[in-house]
Length: 267
Ligand code: ACM
Image 1 (cartoon, rainbow, N blue to C red):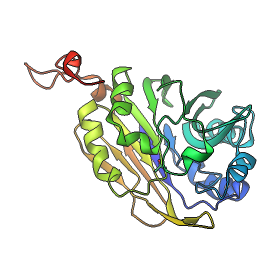
Image 2: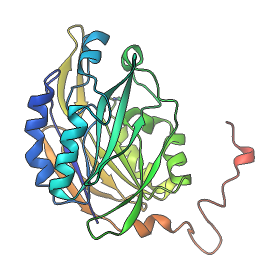
Image 3: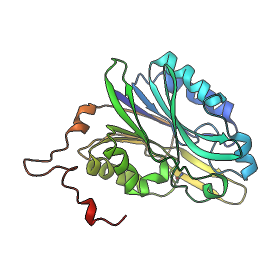
């Protein structure tokens, strides 16, 4: 199957412009799984919680999820994309999984970064793995984490133990370390990872953040199968075989799942 990550430079507070700008890349990706960045249509560095609330959407009935469904139907791809979700009075930094048949599920970011902590409620439902199919109707297991979740190895580990073959990782990375860490997250958990990051600068009126690009697809052998530059919008893609993620034996003696010693680990 083909995995693609779309690296974008959205404009804060202009979801319709951002959706229109990314549409051609999504429809042209020719992939089974397309990953878009965190908060890809709203922008990231909100000026206030009021601005975040004004940009937040219900899921699955909001305009971004509906647009994603249109794209999934037209392309045949499963899409994973980040958006600000509104549920009652609460806002979540969420990622939706959308297939040609419609919205499949939502993951609410567990580990909020920096000023996100002032706008969003941290997700409390834990991590999820969904069974999805590629365009040849072959099924695979898809887990989702969002950006700073990478910093906590338990996120990817939990998804791997729950059976993920591929971890989709919508991101708005500002720290420089994640691109070099992701091959190791993939290796230690025996999964494929697909990090879709954004580029450019964004100001909340008080401070400016610069995003580090380098969207990348990594293999369970710690290979970087595809990578985007630090600057500039880009589309990266790689062919992967999810069955490689189901091999847990390292050799005749070692197995990355059963060799674990959870009773000796701190919780
Ligand atoms: C981040 O979690 N957006 C750094």
